[in-house]
Length: 249
Image 1: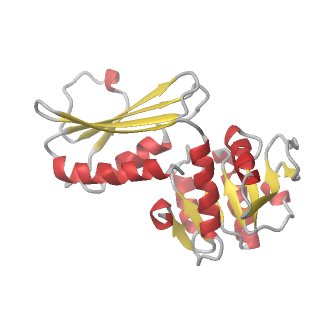
Image 2: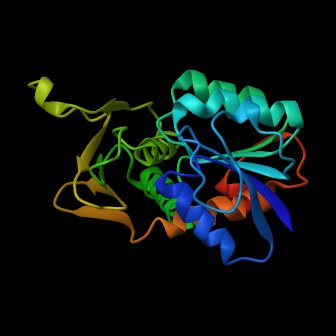
Image 3: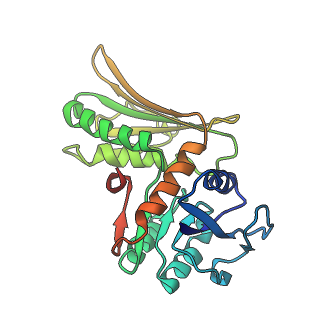
């Protein structure tokens, strides 16, 4: 049975992961890390990752960007593999993750859903066929408590599409600020926040007299919780390096 340290254990995703782990026999949570320090389950909770003294086989970080550095420092100090599922990270923090992967196994992806990662692959295929002929727009919808916009997943999808285009596209986030026609070499990204929407992503390929749409909708945060747990178990025993959902599937 694999032992998990869960960073962000008292957040919405942390509580969901705890509930999912209870239904499994291949892993258990031995400690949590959360700024509140409140104990909501059977495991101890530390307010700072560097204070955690509980031995584990893997760390899952589903917390806040501000907690990343200490989480990685704990992982490096103890030689523990880490699954980084926190979104809203800066380019510097992503570089920090890449640096950590040279010392420990790190699993990093903008979205833990298998379906979303399949969507990214389908989008790449579509872009490789339609690129240059179709305008590309990405619309993402999330609950009204989500802080970052556009979502990390929307950016992941845009990056996947960009990787197969002949010319590097310009990401456009705010069309009302510029009064001009849409450029051909653009990917528009649009964020909608409202209610309790778990997560919806739509990629629109708009051409002359035809539109192709690829979409994914999550009905529950459970899909992300299950994905992060599976990633954690996959990471145990791996060599140092950076892994993502493509490696898992």
